[in-house]
Image 1: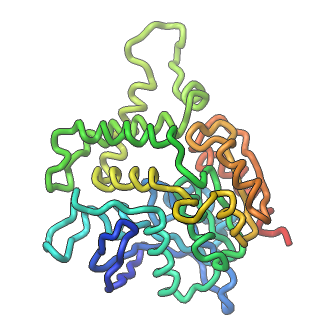
Image 2: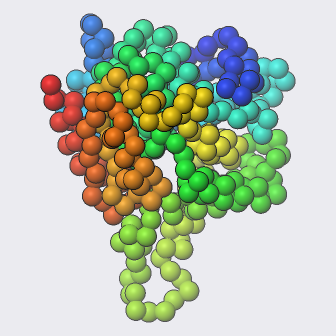
Image 3: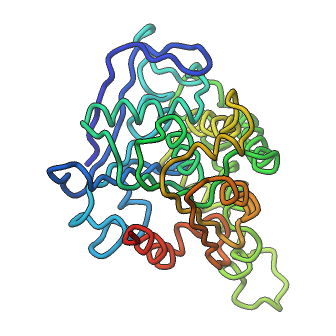
Length: 339
């Protein structure tokens, strides 16, 4: 069950826009020990929430790397999301109405600063492990630079220190789909949902890639010519599933946050910034990931001082960090137990 912390003070974003206050939704699992040395902080991916057990299968379980008998796990819903933290459907105290499309652009650094506020509120000065995949990895990278002594260990999974044009092209195509929905721009929580469903079908192509689609969506009789392919209903189902649970204004702003990600922005060469990371680091890539391919991870492996690198062999593309939970659990558990 999510809990909420409200930072009842002005919060200025990187853009210069000031939010009058910020509410942060978060979940915890397990118990913090006496010396507060067993904290694991999970940073979630794009449309996930703070309930890690809900979206990351077989992780918050006995014997797994988020074992609640061993660790005190925290996950905060990030700024701009649809799941409890301040975002487009939150009330703008200045107007007394939801922000909707007026909600300002946010960056990954803005998200991390909110995490820092929550950590301070919870009395957490250090984490045994800071872990995230995809945009969750963006947050972990930023946090490892913004507060180099916060995490003793860090795990960056299926991620990158800078969003490249290839990934941004998918995001812009998704935003174009949302903009084609004639309701987008209306001051309503229902605005843009049809467009967002199309956007999600575009995103799934980048998350899975050809190998995964050909492996899981083949027709019962591939030799039979048909206009009613199995994959067609899959694309529509995935779009409709997100339509039922998310908000188009949040989705639009979060895609822009992904595009803004650049660890070196305002800091110098990315290589030099990565060299500042003090945490013992685990980098994990997925062999078939076309969104953030293994080549995107090379710069981290070459420049982070204390780093261990693994490639998970999987046909499930970027979504491999969700599907290949057994392989990932084995890698992370060994990483955490290694002295």
